Image (cartoon, rainbow, N blue to C red; front, side, top):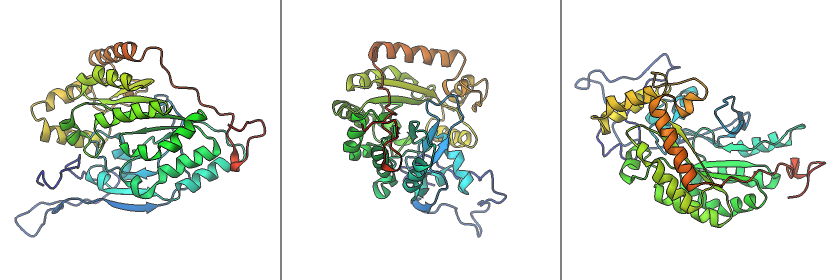
Length: 355
C-alpha cells in the first residue's frame, strides 16, 4: 500500500491473529485476488461492555497494582506499543487492526462505581490507563476518561493519569480539583523531540513541544506532573534523554521515569517491518541493540530486566537518565495520595474525613 494511504498510521501490516485458525491472504494479485487493503484505512469504534472495570496488575515492575482502561486498541499508532498483542484476544490483529478497530467500553464508569460501592473495597491509586491511552482520539467523542475522573473526584479516589495527547487539557478543571485534594498525579509520555520522528513512530500523538507546554500549564495550576521517557529505543531516540529531562524540569515536572523497548509477541514483526520501511540502514543494528538489552532476545519476560533492560547498553542508558535526573529534577517528588477521604456510595468512610 502506498505511503499516502497509510499516512497517520504506525503499522503497515495486518499480522495473522495468533488465536485464529484462519487467515486472509493475497497470493495471486494478477488473478482473481484483490488487495486486502485497497483504500485508506478508517477507524471503526466498536461498543462493548465489561464485567469488571478494574484490572489487577501482577507485575512488580509497575508502580501501581490497579488500572482502568476505557478503550482497547488505539489510534495513536505507536509502533512499539506492547498493548498491540492484547488486541488479538478480542479477535483483531495487532497491526493496523489495533489502530483502526477501537473497542469502546461504554459502561466502564458505571462498572467502576459498582466496584467502589462493594463492601470492603479498599481504595488504591488507579492507573489510567495501564494499556492504551485514555486520551486517544476516541475520548473526544465518548468522554469515558472524563467520566472516570469525575467519579474519582466525587468518591475522593486517587488516580494516576498518563497520556501522549493534549486532549487532557479539556479536563484541567477536574484535575485541578483532584490535585487540591491530593488525589491525582499526571504523567506525560515523551520519548523524543523530533517532529519528523513523531510522524512515523507515534503518528497521532501530540508533539513533545505541546506536551511540555501542558506540563508548564498544569504545574502552574497546581497539578503535579511527571514525564515518562518511554520507550527508549537504542539508535532511534536514545540520544534525547537528557534534553527531554532538561525541558521537563524547566516546565515544572516533579518526577521522571523511563523504560527500554521490548518487542513482545507480534510487536517484533510489526516493529521490524517499520524499521525496514523507515530505517533500512539501521535495521540490523537496532534489532541487535534491543536484543542486547534483553538477554539476547528482543522480547523479555524477566522481572526488572524486561522494563529497564540489562547489559552495557542498558547500563549506559540508566547512567544518562540518573545523571539528568540529578541535574534537572533534584529535590522534587510527587505528593503523597490522600486515601483518608474516600467515600463509598457518595458517603464518607466511618473513619474518614471530607477532603
